[in-house]
Amino acid sequence: MDGMKVEELFGYLKQHGEELRQELLEGRYTPKPVRRKEIPKPDGGKRLLGIPTAIDRVIQQSIAQVLTPIYEKKFVDNSYGFRPLRDAKQAIRKSKEYLNEGHTWIVDIDLERYFDTVNHDKLMRIISKDVKDGRVISLIRKYLKSGVMVNGVVIETEEGTPQGGPLSPLLSNIMLHELDVELTKRGHKFCRYADDS
Image 1 (spheres, rainbow, N blue to C red):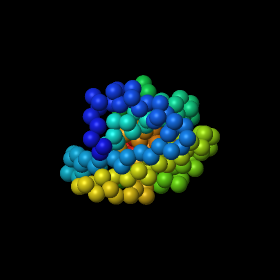
Image 2 (cartoon, rainbow, N blue to C red; image 1 turned 180 degrees about the vertical axis):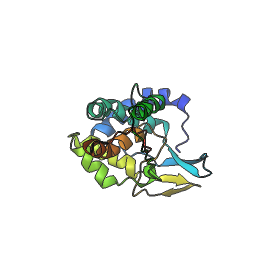
Image 3 (cartoon, rainbow, N blue to C red; image 1 turned 135 degrees about the horizontal axis):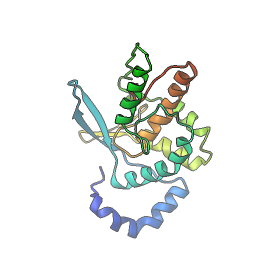
Image 4 (tube, rainbow, N blue to C red; image 1 turned 90 degrees about the vertical axis):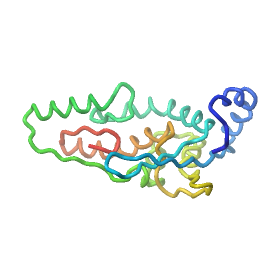
C-alpha cells in the first residue's frame, strides 16, 4: 500500500524507529489502509484478504505477541484455530474421540463471511474487559477502521477484521471465545477452528 518492500523495513526502522515509537506511545500513529487481495475458495467463492503494510505488520505482530498470553489463559480447550501449539489435525483427532465415545449427531457450523462482519464496537467492549491501556485499545480500533484499498480507492471499514494481518486471527478468537463459552456451558462436545465448528 505504501510501496515499502519487506526488505526495506529494517533500514526504515533503524532510521525512523524512535519516531515511530513516539507516535505509538503518544497515540498519534495512524495505520495505513490494507491492500485488498482476492483468493479463490474451494467452493467457487472468493476470500477477501487485507494485506497490511510492512510497518503495520510489525506493529500488529507486536500487539498480538503481548495480547496472546493474556487470552490464551482464557480460551477453551476446544478452540484449535490460529493458536500456539494447536492445529486442524488436533481438532480432527478430538472430533474422532467424540465419535468413538458414542456421540452420533454432528452439527457443522460455518459462520459465513465471519471475518468480514465482525462488529467493531462489540469486539472492542470484549477487549476492554482485559486490556486497560487506552493506547492499545485505540490502536486496535484504528486498525479495524483503517480502510481497504480496492482498485486504487480507499474504502472505509465499518465492520470486520481483514484477514491477512497478524492481529486478525487473535481478534477473531477473542470474539468467538464467547461462542465457545456458551457451547461449553450447554455441555456440547465441539471443536472450533477459526469460524468453523
